[in-house]
Image 1 (cartoon, rainbow, N blue to C red):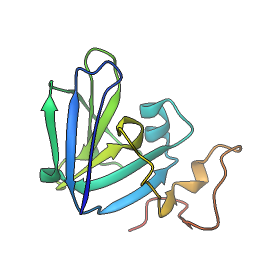
Image 2: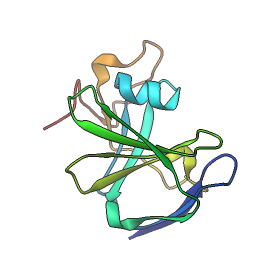
Image 3: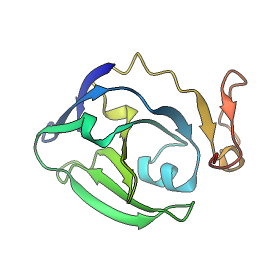
Length: 135
């Protein structure tokens, strides 16, 4: 069982997570890069009921991902910090690692969409590296 808390840059949104990690990955897809404004996103997936917003109310944005899934992104309406994402019809929520108070426990197990990784991104041989989303 993993427990941690986090929130947005301005402090308007706070959350707590308590549950088993389902997946912990770096994603290099176009969607994650655009969503985070970084060269890749590190996401930790939990069962949705394990993620509880304790302060504020995130806004959401729905779109179709690189893989063709309908996704919901949740962010702070004041400062714009990205917090969570989920896929419609699936019971998982991904937490954006940059929003976690103390993320020193984070150790991704894989890189996804390596074929879209930027040329300067280091893809460690210590992780599983997938050219696209594994099935």
